[in-house]
Length: 385
Image 1 (cartoon, one colour):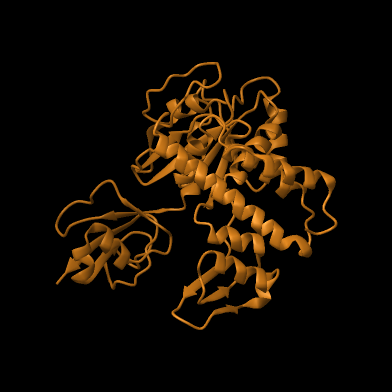
Image 2 (tube, one colour):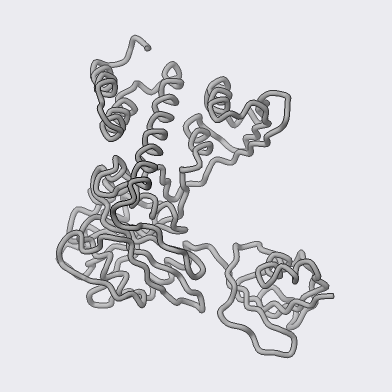
């Protein structure tokens, strides 16, 4: 142990040694990670603590699933994407879900109205988007409190996170609790995963390429790989990467999700001041004010959610017939070849050419090859051999 650790850290370490169950061990480890001095000399210790935290959470999650009691939190994905509505108790999530979707949910002016994830479908621009109201987050859900691990698992499964903030209360305080719990649970919002590639091989040991992008000790990186039983690999760094970011990339439970903020109860007294404070403090998030109760600003909310999905709509048609609905949804820069595969795998194998109508076409019905890049609103007619 480094000699410069604090007495508080030593007390947390002793708390870990005395812990009698996974929840107590997790709480002690979180304290140790917070209290350990952050410098190059403690990098390995930080790495070990984080690995222990990950293992304890896996143990708690596995034990919870094995016990098999409590509500079911898995929601089957439907539509183009799944959006999780996340917030503290009584923040207005149920009202938002009711206003934006076809869901029939209980709405009450009291905490914990929703006890299991509740889905509903939002239709916008011909696209079906699944909204899922997640049971309220509270402090220490990342430690397993109140079905916390199941709640975080439901958030992790979503494609986009919509944080619901009540403007009649301290908005920054709400965001602080939510972001801390999600981060402890391995969910990173509005962050890009590190740009690295791990190419496993049969022999040759571990080779690091792009070392100029690594901000940390190479030996620590190699030890992390060995802990994951990766003994032979080429690791390519293409952007600035810290040891912490590399470790998160190795941890398959870490989720990077786009997010936005839905600021509810914007019609109430003092809501404007809270909105300004929220937007100023969290400038990296799009903040959309809404009054679900009065139905104010619903269309901008739908548009904001749609933008965060980062998708394009591609309509399909069969030769001689009308355009089919709904469209298929794809990532920007998708090709005709990928669209053909979405229609049917046989269309990819027997692809001959396609005709395109819409924004990416130079003229209506343009004949294109499989590598043609599609744009939002294109109509594709695939011809096969």
